[in-house]
Image (tube, rainbow, N blue to C red; front, side, top):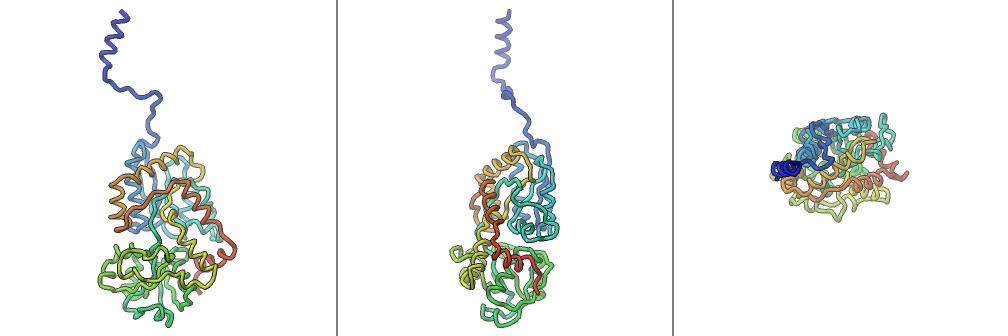
Amino acid sequence: MAQTVLLIFAILTAGAVFPAHGAETPYFQGKNVTFQVGAQAGGRQDRIGRAMAKYFTKYVPGQPTFLIQNKTGGQGIPAMLALSKAPTDGSFLSMVISSYMEAPYFGAPGATYDPRSFAYIGAPSTGKQRNILVMHGRAGIKTLDDLKSREVILGAQGVGNRSYLYGRLIVEVLGLKVRWVLGYDTLQLHVAMEQGEIQGRVNDAASMLTERPEWFDKREIVPLLAMTVPEDLPPIKHPLVATIPSIMQFAKNDVQRNIIRKINSTSRLGAAMAFPPGTPENIRKIFEDALLKIAKDPAFRTDWEDIVLEGQPFERMFSGKEVIEDVKSYTDWRPEMMSMYKRLAHEAPK
């Protein structure tokens, strides 16, 4: 009788698939993850965040729902404070770019977070630095000699913003006379240039090529100088910017040269992502594994080239270990560099 029962059970269960021993529901199944982006909607950082959220949904086991939260302003301090105090259960993820890591080291009010304490999952490479100083054609400035010969009006988002630092550094190195107008967001700066409120600005060349292609096609702007180090020129493949010089060739001393090198060494920190301090390693590892799988997805690579970096191919994905190495290096400030950097990046122009 027992043999008959066993035989019937074997027949009925032939081909059936049973859960593996100890199999569990994926941790993130049915969960929501807030994905914080410290930039306004529509900009490059926002495009990166939305692209990553789309593919995290595909590759994180359990396919959680991602909610993009844009938090801007304040030198990135509000966004980083939110990250530092967020739950450690994997429900809050944030982008952490290099400029957000500076405030705690330069005495910025309220910057009580430690960038080294975040649980980094990794980062997509955002490519080589392509930031350039451009002047609108109506300013009548065609060369660097023209730029040096008169006072010019430059615009930027505000003190502490990366493009503001680039502009201040260029002014310092070239000895320019500048009147600054601050308080814009990225898209407002484009409009301010078109309306003549400002004459020029520093911005990512590839982003401008996508957002204002007519500037390039009609040669309405005059690119003058690249923040890129010489070995990385030209910053993008366009005849209008292919031959502009690097700021490095005008640097007057080692401090200036070292700051330029530091700025150009942050390819892993343009779109780093992290959980709050104290997040369990197994949660961090789930996202790091998903990140490395995303890098191999042809659809992601296509989206990255078409939507995120506007024609620039995807290069590679960095692991959490690689990112934290860069974080430690970037936050290691020598006194002489800190003094100059603080003046240029974190103090209002006089």
